[in-house]
Length: 416
Length: 178
Image (tube, rainbow over all chains, first blue to last red; front, side):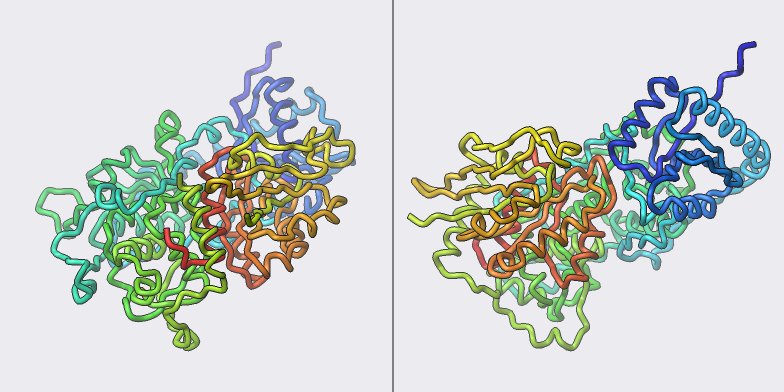
């Protein structure tokens, strides 16, 4: 009798190094005839754990606690009998592996039946969430404790071919020089940056721009641990908190234009306010346009640059010191003029924005745009510590003139 | 004419040879051999002595790019290599079992040199292994009371390696004028 074909399973692997992971992927693809697909943990519906790995017990406990309804296949050299798991003895043979997948599939079907009714009710009643302006704040990526899908003891390895095609997020880095600053970033009218008295007027409130709404939505996605969509009346933006990615159906040129427009908080009657809605990632058609995925921080960084246009966020005070928690990941970011110098200076200690401008002898717009972007991704803040007052405006340097000169020539060479 | 060196270090397979090739103006002098020890599990060929490349920065003026052998049994060479160096580029392979342990090992091994100069860290293979994240590396460095550049790097991309070396230069002296 011909057995009924089973649905393609999405499996996550644990306790396997890169090599074993790849071998398992090939085994599933070949002898197991792609009955399952290896995916990132949040997308999986079956877990496979190598019980001979170190910390396998901890991993198993994690899996059982986190997703008690998800079937777990245990691979081991020793015969194991663990409740609520499916055992496969090593070396795994095709037949036993296929039988384990079938058992997992039956398990899932059974659970699905039980929960279908409940899910239908939940989906139909899920309300659209209106954004509250007061909630806008810096994006704070979750700590490991807040992100239950990431195991501290596990190394997450992507082998999902769809995931690997998302190359756009790795191409975010771009370096712009002083000559191209205005044309690429934009111009702020009404502020003469040559007059230091006017610098204080070069501030902006991110909450009044698309940037603020995006940041607020990201915060909600992290708090709710949920994939959500920002419906702005412009282009749909989908936020994936587990992979720290966004999907936006717009190119950079369109984003740059929209970023600069102030959003009316009280739209005229009939116009749509910005809302958030729950998203089922499997139903959203993101997979066909993988180039529209962007890494979260790279996206916020550039969005803040295009919103700032050389202004600084109004929450920061120009005369009080700011500090940088860490170097920005510059290979994946838009690098504005002197950004690396500013980062290098701030990692030596907190300084006020005015001190940075005078210390590095650069235009205020370059400092303002850097602090806007770094503040937006949560790596820069105003310092309130007493010790900060002893910091001087001088740029620390231990290097001889000769060395300075060689560093400078190396930079020129690297920048072509 | 003064001679300046930038040293590239890191574990086997982290991309030192590739990174030097990305920057070098001359064909790389490679000393790769078929691996015969535990290294062969990660890389069929490995650098047994050192890699060497040159970056021409002016007429007749050169920056020598040296890559240390990845295997620890060659660590006696590291002191010789770093003599006269202006900074260290540490490349870490994110897909290795414990990249933090690698980081600590190399930071400790080159502590004296780093103290006198500076270091920038490039993390490779992040497309294959997304964990740990760059933020995780910074958390580890904070425990060591170090604030240094750590970037995701594809050693094949000249731009990535270039940004890493630029950050090293600025961390040595933020006052350098662009």
